[in-house]
Length: 331
Image (cartoon, rainbow, N blue to C red; front, top):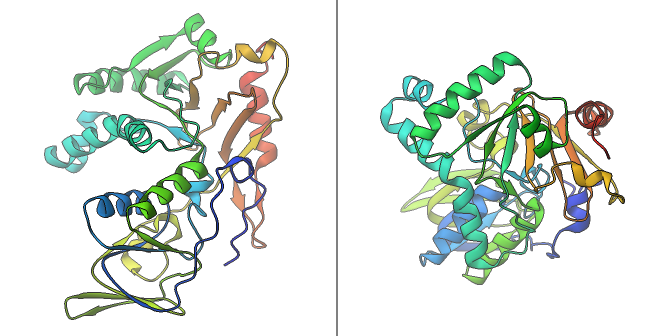
């Protein structure tokens, strides 16, 4: 697997982080974490802080996958179901846990960033979820009532108020989640890795796990040139899951997101777009999402695809959608 990033704003602006070494020897650990994205790295950090000996293995490197290439939005809500629907789907106990984790996710992340002084351009200025049609708006408003009973503090925003907050006339209604925000995602991954290493975690790149086998007292994770013996294994491969655990890979439907960014924009007009620093996304299942960076660079993303040659496409459609959303702004 090539470790180079495609052309990427995040790769061009992220905090420096040298390549992780390849595992070329046997190791002993308490826990092996497979995957150096957000989930694996935060797991490794928490375990290392608690005194466990942790080894992280990745076929690429820290943040190489979706964790280092996403839109960088921090959105504290389960978007497609309200709490009543959630209870019907998964039962009251799981629904309560999912609601607690989801609604508290932004505060948890920004508190982690503050506690460890992570250099990832964090801004907790709120997230606007705008309704792409009247039906979606009715569903959103119903879900807001339910989530607010759970302590969410969401706010319905309509008409001129929404236009002022977004800088767009494309939407009539939306929901403001005040605890949401934005980060530089690749910097976040690298900074969590830095702190995890400072607490003793070992991180190896170019070291995909080719085989897992049970052994006395735990597990052995084999790579091309080494292995790790540990009592526990955490598989945090998400959309990059392969047949290492077939049941995991069969449970995942990967989607491709593409993103475009402008150069920093000059002039007063751009200040009308997302003037209070909110991020924005819409209620389509294949969403659009956008933000204005502190340097007045606009970043906008949506659905894309990857061809057989490995090249990403869909950028032209994303640009067209950005024009649709912001064509009537003063920028």
